[in-house]
Image 1 (spheres, helix red, strand yellow):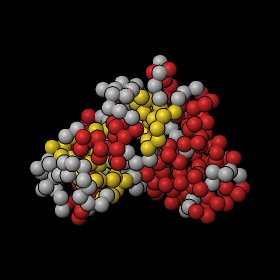
Image 2 (cartoon, rainbow, N blue to C red):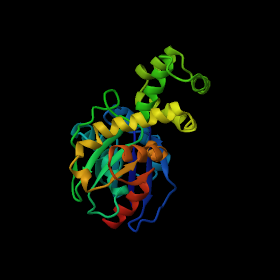
Image 3 (cartoon, rainbow, N blue to C red):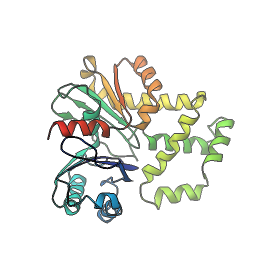
Image 4 (spheres, rainbow, N blue to C red):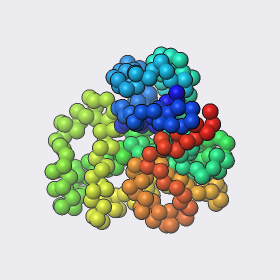
Length: 286
């Protein structure tokens, strides 16, 4: 029995399949499990709180976990240890979320591509057909994560407070969200997962894409991401496509294609939820 996880900061999707790829249970969803942000105790609590996951914990033989915050050694080791303590009969393989995006978006195992994630957070890597190459070590949502959900959440809140929103958008924004300063600061500085809190605001953009203000906001974020991240791979971009994974990328496909035409790189595939491609990959490669 195989357990495959697409883990973000906001949520994790878990799929249980047999060795032939047959799904044995409907998709299980838990809160996000970012080991770079959450403490050990909280990570364990989130997993153990899922009755569905715990009902399989002795039967699972392999756990393939792809997650935000798993790109550096210490958080990766923390999560590996926790999963080993829960799925006691399983081999545990923890990879960064970028590798999930690679395996879900490339057209064949040996395809070279630049692969981007735009979800709650954002990242960009080059896959040479065998190995993943990262030229920028992400410092997380506070300093980086251009064009991510939390980036756009910050931009929307700042624009609201700086009185830089058109009046109709401002009214719609304050109708949808609690924008009291104390409430925002409480969620940012007193609650866990401030990045996920910020990302909740991003949906507003895609409900108001007919606004020129919103469209420019999206394009400016993507342009910044392309400049800072995609163009770390200038030479590779001459010959390979750029694939995108994540909900922000999925809903901003039109704007991504416009920026790609503007800046001169080739867009490849879009995958909103990488986990479906991961099931095929792992059952084929057991």
